[in-house]
Length: 301
Image (tube, rainbow, N blue to C red; front, top):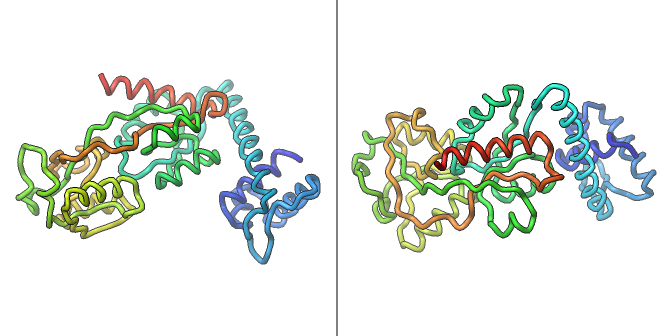
């Protein structure tokens, strides 16, 4: 057994396809298949359900995968640590983020990038449940989203809570002059207003739906999408109004748009930046996490 075989196994879990797993491993598909079959022979276990295509893992394979993820994560952490000792903090940090979180991610990355200019980022937009799975399987180094406090404690994540600054309604005053004003809007004032919202699988959307339902206010959703970019564009042209966590959108991006706070109960989940517990977090993610702690503390003052 060697580390490459375990990397191939983890890549196959992520890609769910032999060809794509081979590409991710920078080997040919026959090489990947041969090395995985060698691993099965060495372990004297069948790990993969094979048909004409990849058909998942056996029960034994799922058990081996748990260890493979841990070993590959430690191995990659060691490589990053060696690189940081030789060249300083550098490499690619994998970040998983839920859409419409309570901060502007690029704003945070710019501050940390000034401190570590050799650090690069690969950002994946995930649902809250997908984010937890990605953190547990080490397919992302950092998670930014909404979490149950009890879940963070149970999984021993390191977490930096993000300040809940409330919720705002974003709109173009030319198209929605009735929303202009200085006082916070109530849920009932949005009755009949066309809204641009994330799809219903997203936590923030479910949070909105539940409170509008309790207030017996019917939502008029004119656009529903997973893309925040499409939501902002639709709001810019006046297709509808957008409901968003405060702090998510940069004011400079949309100077023509107006914002008003929404009177709504705080979210039950906690917005947070999380990484694995000490000892399991990669050096790169730990450096990043420590910088985020300083940055968030400075914002709170």
